[in-house]
Image (cartoon, rainbow, N blue to C red):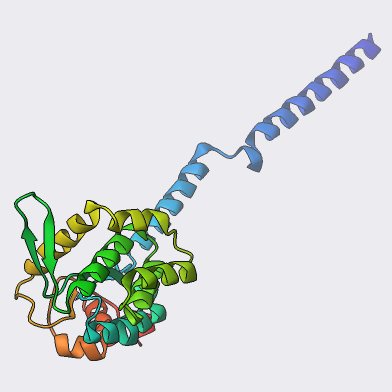
Length: 242
């Protein structure tokens, strides 16, 4: 009888130990209550909010109204625009408008005719520039193509072919563009954008920064400084401008 009681006592102790171990396994650090997960989510959300509050300036929108055979346009693209972009590509978003002081006429048959300040060759070159600008989406490659072609645009088609090979740009689709009526439609759109400028264009190239034509003479000599001035006006001065 005593042995039976002793065995029951031992079984009871073992049962209690098992219950305690099971309880601890459910309440240990690896099984923390959901509140901890909630705390983690709050910390992540707070971090995201802080990041969103940090200044993240958009690039300055630089629009270049130019002509393919204009010496001043050539000088600006090669001496100001390209170096400024290479120095701070994240600070600038560039749009090209190749038209300048040209005129557009719609003929009786509905086709378009252009007269350009530097003659028919410039009209052809402007048209090729328009096709390249539409087709090349990478900002760096687009700028390199424009700078390469404007370097020597006397023979526009040859300049395009040479620059396309040099910068790895696909040729066929762009060539189809300027051999079709689509190229004339593109050039007409560039003309409309140019004529819409207020005040109207009086000098080529004309540069706008975030839509403003202010400080044209200064921009033609120091585009990078002008871009930095606009960027700094939005908030903290970008490090690249310091």
